[in-house]
Structure formats: C-alpha cells, structure tokens
Amino acid sequence: MENGLEKMNIQWFPGHMTKAQRMIEENVKLVDAVCEILDARIPSASRNPYIDRLAAGKPRLVILNRCDLADPALTARWKKYFQRQGLAILETDAKSGRGVNGFVPAVRELLGDKLKEYEAKGQAGRTLRVMILGIPNVGKSTFINKVARRKAAVAGDKPGVTRGRQWISIDSGLDLLDTPGILWPKFDSQEVGEMLALTNAIKADVLDKETLGANFMLRLRELYPDALRERYKFEPDPNANGYELLEAAARKRGFLVSRGEYDIGRMASTLLKEYHDGKLGRLTLEAPND
Image (tube, one colour):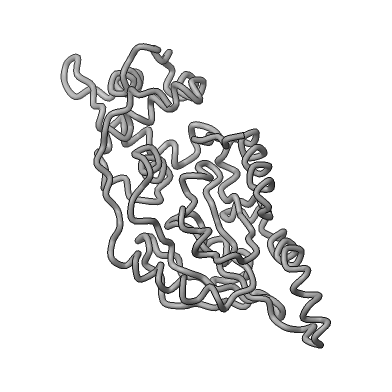
C-alpha cells in the first residue's frame, strides 16, 4: 500500500476482552475442534494473531463468511492459501444462509479420525464438541443461528459482550461452544485497525471518520478504481491525496456546505455506509501472500 495514508491513533482493548480471552483459554480443552470465522473481505486482518496459541493444536475449520460481499477471485486465492496451511475451509454468507449447510459435513470430515476412535472404543454416538471463535461483528451469532436453525446465539452489537459459556446443540451428535468476539491488545499496523473499522469489527467512531474515509479512498483508487468511477462518477486523480478524492466525490454528490466548499465529513460517512451496504460492489481489501 502506498504511503499516502494519513496517520491515525487507534487504541482498542477494553477490559472485558481480557476476560473473554481467559474464558476461551480455559474452555478450549473441552472441545474436539476449533472453528474460526473470518470476514472474507479481510481474511488476514480479521484473524486473531493468538489463534494458534488459543487453539492449542486442535483440528481447525476456517469459515470465510460474508463471501457475498467479497471479491470471488480473491476468495478463491484465500481458500487455497489456508488449505496450504492444512486448514479445512468453508465459504459462507451467514445472512442468507448460503454455504451454511456444508458446516456439519465439514466438521465430520475434519474429525473423521476422532469419530473412528470413538467407534473403536464403543462410543459411536458420542457428541462432537466444537468451539466457535471470531472477532466482534464478523457474523458469528448469525452463523450459529443458521446452523442451529433457531435463535440459539444472542448477537451483541457491542464488541466482546457475550454471555458466559454457551453450549448450543446442533443435532444429536454435535455441540457448539459459542464464545465472545475478541480482538487483541495491539494491532500490528494502522492498516489492520482501519480494515477492522471499515468492516465494523470496531466502531468507526473510535477513529477520525474523515481520515478513515480519506485513507479508504486511497485504497479504492489502488485496488478498485472502477468502483469509484461507477459509484461516484469521477476519475480518481493519481496525484490527489485522500481528502481531495473525498472532495471530488462530494462535488459529484452535490454535498455543498457553502459556496465552493464541499462537505467531506458527510462524504466520508456516505462512503463508509455504502461500502457496508455492498453498494460499491464485491470488494476484498487484502490479498494473500501467495
């Protein structure tokens, strides 16, 4: 990514996150496998860097959720990337339910050896237990409810605020352990923090919205210039900074504050909302390191 990005101070780690992390560490020994739900638009940024330690060598299934909002070509590349790491992969759109039916078969395949082991011990009907992990607002509760075919998980819009331990029975042979959405104490880079804000994993209010919008404009100019041309009807100047790109879009939208002055704050809010609503098209903000 070019270095035209404006610097932002992003601090994020409320106390309840530490408590949630401890709860996950204590409960992972109770499960046979760990299922990690990622946002298909930001598969790396939405991945908890502590996952390898938290999952403690358990078999893992990675769910690329919100694939309906992500770039299909990049989703295919991410799928291969995770498969090369020996992880099982499932693409879903929990909101519509697309791909969710593949979850139970994927778990049974992932734990095939464990099922054979139980059978050999005369425990053929023993219930498999899977922990569901994911950052806040990644669609975890929606996913669980779709898999369970009922409102089993309570969605909390406040990141990290989930009830204590929640076991959800999917069928006679599978129980899911829902966990609070957790983030990590320090983002590796401003870029990761911004991507989490762009996809609503952290509230954009903790950042300066105009700066977030300006930096997002630079990303779009680099990754998806056609999205800017089609949605905002202007040609992104290769030499403009992010604020100037916001202003160009505000001019096209007629967001005038006073004579000759355009409302870039309103434009930044509009840009972020239209991205959340999928109006800019299917965009993935990072590519795997192939």
